Amino acid sequence: MFAPSQTILSPALAARKRAVDVQSRAPDVALAVETAAWKVYVPAYTAEMRVSYVKHRDAWDRLLARDEVTLCCFCNLTKFPLHCHRVLLGNLLAKCGAEYHGER
Image 1 (tube, helix red, strand yellow):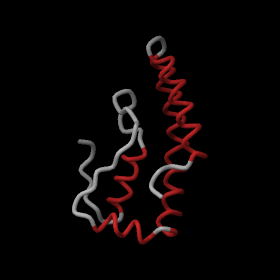
Image 2: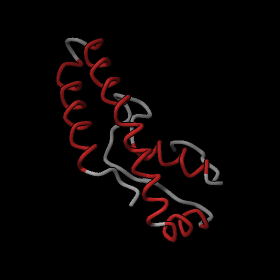
Image 3: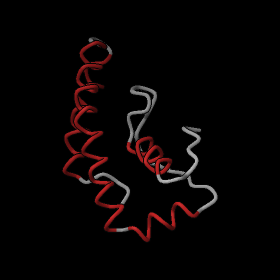
């Protein structure tokens, strides 16, 4: 309910793989590929989370009621900082009243 669907994740991961594959020889191309994919991914993930919020409100409320939450994922943020759904989710949770302290 908090993870992206395969519908939006698969194209994003494919673009990230293309970006990583060319990064060492064409960093500007890699950044362009990742940026273009991210511009599509962010609104799609946000839309999915809006649906999740309505459909799974009880789970959202339980998560928001916790004193502290650690969001995990397999993304490596060293290559493309902040390009991960856990960062987006952290910001969405903050809009719902949580305190977001960023990456640790």
